[in-house]
Image (tube, rainbow, N blue to C red; front, side):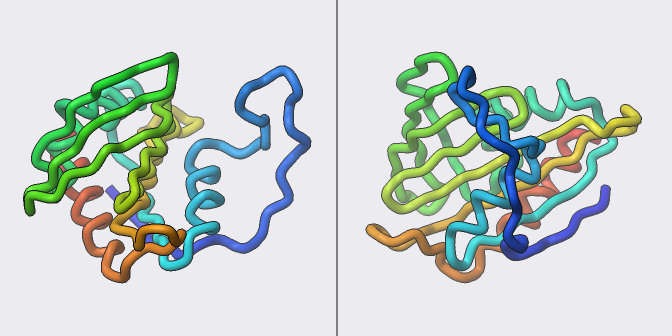
Length: 170
């Protein structure tokens, strides 16, 4: 496994949005899209890595909010999905430190973006073109209510999450 931690990338020029799609077709893969989302949040970091496992297996763990997600997210004690409508999800999470959050967002193959008043969670995964593994990226952390700002220190937790996911997939 290799990983790289980066801050927000430089500006990108996305392709024109597709009128027929609910999600604009920007020409960006899920990992790059996660970098773009993080770029809009001061203090956000993205940790990226390549896992020696097939995309379907990696995403099965990452997107299993009530199971596999808690195995690699070091601060999550439990997550319970309370509503699903297509790719829209509402979940209630409790951290290992007792904090609770109602998370709202989107989970679809290779993409997850959940947020609450105090928490942002972003995950992306893409199969490598040669089939030799899966590229994953994580972002998120505690945020200050009413402001799009991640509290410093999230990078360390993101690296721990990626390390735990890597061990889980071995």
